[in-house]
Image (cartoon, rainbow, N blue to C red; front, side, top):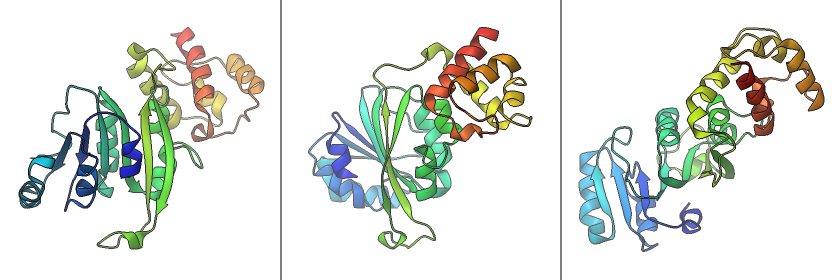
Amino acid sequence: MTALVATTPGPIVELGAGGGALTRALARLDRPLTAVELDPRRAAALRRELGGTATVVQADVLRWPLPREPFVLVGNVPFHLTTAILRRILDADRWRSAILLTQWEVARRRCGVGGASMLTVQSAPWYRFTLDRRVPARAFRPVPSVDGGVFRIDRRPEPLARTPERRAYRAWVGDVFQGPGRGLVQVLGRTSRPITAGAARRMLRDRGIAADTPPSRLTTDDWLELWGLARGRA
């Protein structure tokens, strides 16, 4: 994870420093480092140990105000807070890259391996998700019941969709993932921005997509093509 962070520029913010295993390695990069930890005892211990090499903040990562200048996010994300932390990150501005460790299956889904999650699809026009590696459970202390996975998120230099449309796009993707209907054509016709059956069939045929393809299997380009149709109907 430190090697991945080293490929990025700027200050570093670590979410959930814990006992400092990652914090110590990040401090050796000799870049401005802020480590956020909820537990006051752990935060105090890290502050004493690291001294002037890192700024240790005792705070809840879901509420702590993120820096205003560009920065890099890194963290061994608590498994039970993965979705909440990811939503917080993806709604935030100014950070350039995020290097994260989560459950292996979560990492795979976030990066579209075996099908993308709804959260990833909602964010893909503005971010790139890249799977790095699997981390065996035995590498953790205490040992969890599942393996971990390292992946990175990079903000796209040029968004694939207009940023003012982000909220509408996310809501529409949610409609498609959770909407009623048998097959994509029916589902796409029953969203808040419906696509006519004829237009949906033509688009699916032109892109070689079977009508029974689940939303999680569509590519980012597929979603953007559909969004163009949906936006035209609004």
